[in-house]
Image 1: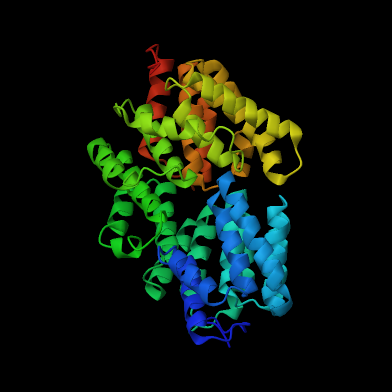
Image 2: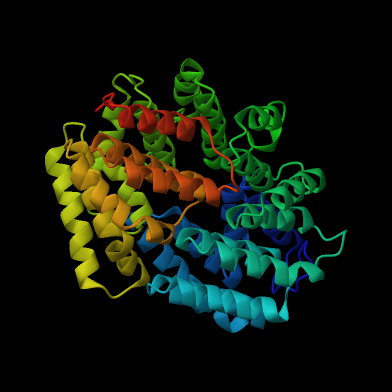
Length: 450
């Protein structure tokens, strides 16, 4: 039996195959129903090694430490079922094994070897893309997508989603015009491709065109309201556009109604919320008691240690919001993990993690000279924390604002110039306002400390 992408499978039951097809399409579209179909698949075919391996990989993408045991259980089930797996399916089992061992780059290599033989395997394409995203490997994302593109005929069921991934990789590597075209084509071919839609939103963010971004998202809500918690991230993008236009009441409304509709402690949801509140505070906007629930949730994550990207966003909630003990505990744990080493994630705890964590702690304490020194130190390596340019920009903004408050006007101007260069010569209203502050500071006016 073949799946929806024309790949041979070891499944022998038509209903199980239907569930597997819906799992794969759901993963590509970030659909909320993917988990339901995965459960039904593994109930019908518990000995499907690829399904068990995929379950483990999906849990690893979610991040929290307590889910590692579930991923390990999925690996054990996949290994038990491996004798009945086809060669392509067995590679997924090997991929999960090396990833669980702390080697995501080796997991990518397994998937890329699979794509050498089966380039039209859309799930492998998406999983390689997703792991590289966690590692901040935008160039690798682009290489991976572009080398399999010839295998995707116009009628391939995954072609629209492939183009959505290509759009995002193009945007993250600075090809903004091409990214916009690819993202729009992706959505035309796959109307529920939230990833492609959000890639175009990224383009508007990076090129400082918030109004065009709002026009792009408005009326296309069906492309992301079907999603799992990724839908909160798209609403986050819309909130960023309103923020750049100074429409802070709309930002706070979107925060309450959509971004934090569900008060989860999923690190991706926490990152949306903490980075948005920090951006608001940097603009002098009072956010009321909204930090409290984020700080409480983040206080329970100080020992997590799975991703430095997650840890730094937990720190945003803790530092400067009356959680001094938890802040210090988390910073110390990051340093301890960095010192212990032993995995790729631990290496990222070291660089950029340690200095970035020190900088966020200092920022929360109002020590802006130290905050600027530490955050500026790791600007060139922050991509290793993973995520996108838009997500990491909150740390860039904190670096800039710390430098302004510390009187480092020349150094801040150089950072703004570099930020503009990386955005293709465009600047958003945040950057323009900071240039005004630099001009005011040089003319003898005081730069606001808060």
